[in-house]
Image (cartoon, rainbow, N blue to C red; front, side, top):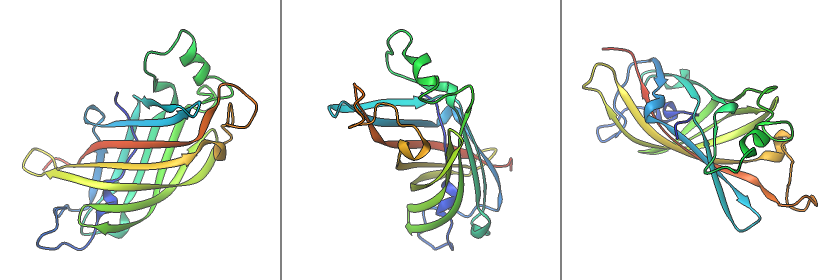
Length: 202
């Protein structure tokens, strides 16, 4: 499963001798979809998490340790690239249709990073805005920096990010627990992102 959405730049901070994040001059980095993934899970019937993901993800990151205040992250997930494990016949079309992701009317799920705070040598918190089904709502990413490769033709930065949101905030209310619809699907969706960003050729 290949997927989004997002933001190593959140780790920018004044360099220190033991800082695991190397100095990177300000530049635009692009998500390498071949080395990235986005998976998520939601409660199914209150019994177990149902895991899913998206294969169509793009992201750009304007970042540099010399200009951390100018960090800009924009990420886009193609809603129609939904990836489900062993779906029953017709199930993918149902989830992509009206009442769920409504991918024809709303083909993209986006995230735009706003403020960020470094919370440790390898950790940071990034607050931004997620847009889904035509609705904007705040979203926070909790970032872990894994490593960097600076000796190739272009710099690479690797990270993972986790977070969660309530789908009802975006008007996605089908089969919520207590709604009387059966089977029930939880309101809170938790996600994990792993990815590599590739910078300008050196």
